[in-house]
Every structure is written in structure tokens, then in C-alpha cells.
Length: 327
Image (cartoon, rainbow, N blue to C red):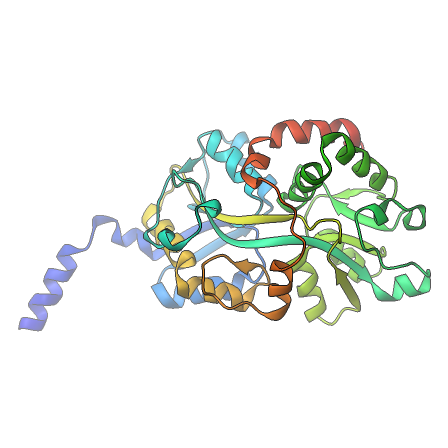
């Protein structure tokens, strides 16, 4: 009887929104998503439905729908779009209790977004194409301007891909805007077109459609693990990096489930799970990184203000469009 009474009291003490915690809907741009979300469901009992899309696509969708969304949580992608979305009133602030152990540089003080991992941009090359065409391995951004790589360099548009916006912002930060745009214009001469998704350049290079991709580090590592004959290298003159955040949408139908997901992915359990299924680097202190991921963290990361990069997104993309939009 006592057990029944305690169970009844526990049930009565549960918040009204507890029923909502059984399912969460997310927009996601992240590698290893299925394994990560499966573990979340096993740990919490909360089912997940998701739609994979780049951060730029999410922002475009939010603007078109005036902030109305079918998702509860935004998981991964480029920080620039999260900063823009927060500024336009599309996100709901939530300060997780798990956030206290994180460096303040990795989250928004008001709770509009929290960083869950750090990613970087590198070069991914098709070994067979490089050997067949006798192309040297590129070592720097300056190398990608060389005529020998004409038509062999694939990139995505920064207007859609947060990873590639991070690349553009890093180059402008490292070189200064005048020299940075000159470098991007010189690289553009070797780029036949700009794809609409961040993973597409590396995917196409893996199947031999071109020799070199500028790619998210984790995408290149995934392709290697699938057995493709590719190699990768970090640019010696500065490695662009970005924070992959998580955020709660304003007007979320299941906010309690959304908060539970945010709490979980920021927890030690969630961060260890990320380290298992993705080659981005979890941000929580004390989480052990795989050797390749540690090498990424130890590379020559560009000194840049990624939050300012988000604030400058509209201006920078306008300048990009004026230079390269027709491609």
C-alpha cells in the first residue's frame, strides 16, 4: 500500500507538461544523427522525429513562415544562422542546468543557443584523381588559387551552408576584408560551381567528380570510414572552425521535450555519445577525444570571433552574392 501511495504521489507531482516529454521534433544538420538520437530515446524514453537540412535552409524556412515551425529544437549547423534567428525573434531562451561547466565563449548568455561541439573545415582530395592528373596536394588556401587546380575545387555556397559561411568569415578575419575577398576571388577561378549543401563537395570528390573538396572535417572522416580512397589536410595558413549549437524554437509544441533534449546533449552522457558517433569535438570539459578529432582541435585554428561572424552574416552574404552569386 505504501508503494502504491508513493507512486500515486509521484504521479501527482509530475508537471502537466510531462505528457509532452514523450516526443520531440527537430531540424538537424549533424553527422551520426541516428546513433545519437537513438541513445537519447533509450536514455529518456522520448521519441524523436527529425528533418535533416542545412542551417541556412532552416533560417530561410523560418523567415518565410514568419517564425512558425513544426519543430521544437534546432540541432547542429552553423552558428551564424542561429545568431540571425535569435536576433529575428525565432528562438526561445533556455538556460540548461548543464551549461554551468561550459566556457562562456561557447554559449549565448541569454540562453538563445548553446554550443554542443566544435567543427572545422579542411581539404578532402581524391587520391586517384590527384595521381592521374599529377596534381600536388594543396597545403594552404593560397594553393587553391593556383591555375593547376582549374575546375577541380568544389565548395558549397555560404548562403546555405553554415560550414562554408564559417570558412568565408575565417578567411576575412585572418586576412582582413580587402585581402580576404581577393583570395576568395582568386579561388573562385578554380571552382566550377557552388553546391547547395555542405556535404556535397566531399561526396562528389569521393566518387571522382573532382579532385579537391573544401569540406567539413567530420564529413571527410565519414567518407574515409566508408572506404573511399580520399585523403585530407588542414590548411596551414589557418583552419576555419565553427560551433555547432542547439536551440529551442519559439512556439515549440513540445517545449519540455525540447528542453530535455538540450539538457541531455549538454550532459556528460550526451557529450560522450556525440564523441562516439561524430567526429566533431564535443565541447564539455573532460570528454575524451579520438586521435583524429584531437588533431583537429590542435590544428592552426583561425583566431576569429564566431559570434560577430553571425552578426555580420547579412552584410557578408550580400558581398558574396555580388561577387559570386551567378555561379
